[in-house]
Amino acid sequence: MNYLKIAIELAHNKEVFRSLLHGVEKEQYLWKPAADKWCLLEVVCHLYDEECEDFRARVQQILHNPDHALAPIDPEGWVIDRKYLSKDYDHVLHAFLVERGRSVNYLNALVTPMWGNTNMHPVLGPVNASLLLSNWLAHDYLHIRQINELKYLYFCSRTDEPLTYAGNW
Image 1 (cartoon, rainbow, N blue to C red):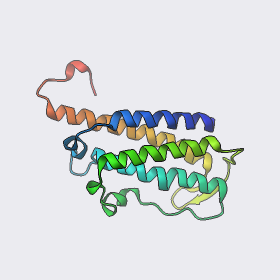
Image 2 (image 1 turned 180 degrees about the horizontal axis):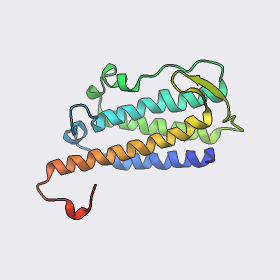
Image 3 (image 1 turned 90 degrees about the vertical axis):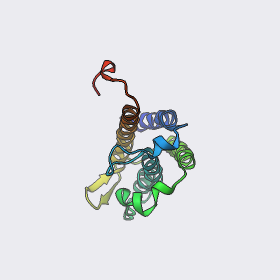
Image 4 (image 1 turned 180 degrees about the vertical axis):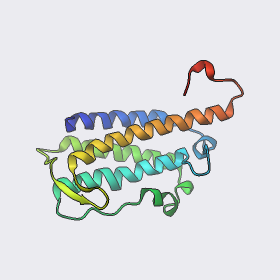
């Protein structure tokens, strides 16, 4: 897929995230379907960190400084290390949406980017900028699905009505 089309999709997803996540009450954004699962607050914090320190930073690095080692990231560890559950939900959501706007502006401003530039990923081996860009969009879709599932499960936990009429989840 053309990188400008991916940038358009990332911009559309910004509005999807805004719509899905804006105005959620504290009880819901802290609710977890199980102790080992993330709540909406943790998802939002993760999206923010990934936007700033993974996808945009790594795409920029591979495009502009492909010979420098990628900075290490620890998305699973950040949940505890960065105290996601103590963060202000609305503040982090706003910060993520601002950063997504910056990411889209960055992508739209690129002039003849070298999508084939590669860097050594510590687990995957050589990765190119195009692969990271494509996975950035896929990452969005995975978390949009996760957010919808969390909202659905939360709703299921709060209603006494059978939901079989709606269809199978």
